[in-house]
Image (cartoon, rainbow, N blue to C red):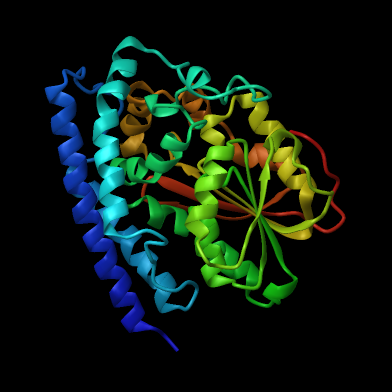
Amino acid sequence: MADYVGMSAQLVGNALRFGWYSGVHWLMDRESARLGATPRYKPVRPMPSREELLADLRRLLLTDAALVRDGIVPPDDAGPGGIGDHLGRIRAMLADLPGSIGRRESEETRTAEVLADPTGLPSYFTQDFHFQTGGYLSSDSARLYDVQVETLFHGSAGAMRRAALWPISEFMRTRDQRRMSLLDVACGTGRLLRQVRLAYPAMRLTGLDLSTAYLAEADRHLGRLRPVTWLAANAEAIPLPDSSQDLVTSVFLFHELPPDVRRIVAGEMARVLKPGGRLVFVDSVQMGDKPGWDGMIEAFPVRFHEPYYRHYAIDDLSALFKGVGLSPVSSEIAFMSKIMSFEMPIGAARGTA
């Protein structure tokens, strides 16, 4: 039975989230200008109008609410921590702004190595992605990450991430969740895993990330829900057996990997998938996905420290995943993200791209 009450609650929550984070976005822009930030990069390629952006955002939020209507996931909750905790994170983000602007102006991108121990971590990971303090290595960075991303996308980051629940639900339609296992590669602060846990409380879940600070934040975010197994490990060598996972997910990882590493990680995700298993991939839209939006893709790596984004934006993801033995199932655009799913065919030869 369709849950229209839950759908309405989700829509209201999404609208409030959009309004709140749009206000925070305006405040951050005002403070950035006051602190003397360089004017934004003007792209050569086409840019969408404000009306186009808002129309596409409305479609995303309506689709997100339909997840609740169709019983795929309960209405979104804020997770552990109340309004005081949230406001504290917003204040900390504002306090961190002068440092991040200073790094952007000076093009300094290696302070994370000073603030945290980079021993054993690949050099591509120990950078100040987005010019954020501590890169992905510090507990302060982990605490601020979600409010930073939601502010950037005007409160829509959660809805883009939850779009992964559609292909997951299609895969799970005739399966017993008690027998299913899911690995989230580069799970970050655990936002997707919390949504999966709410939807599938009996599924075996594993979150893998290179950052112990982000894994600690992910564990906090799961709160009192059924525990998740956490792996502090490199996705280039996933410490799980061959053919051990029914589902593998990856959210906003590949655009932060060098091209050669992208292919190694794809091979590892394919290796741990069971025959008939499903990979659900979420990342940024690429050049040509929405030709009228290519200017935004052009501007993104200039405005933020994203050293591998330009190559990601033109990479052939379908060929990449085909090269490790995966077959395409679906591909959808959700506002500024794309959601692709792939299957490991039964009896397929596995390899590297």
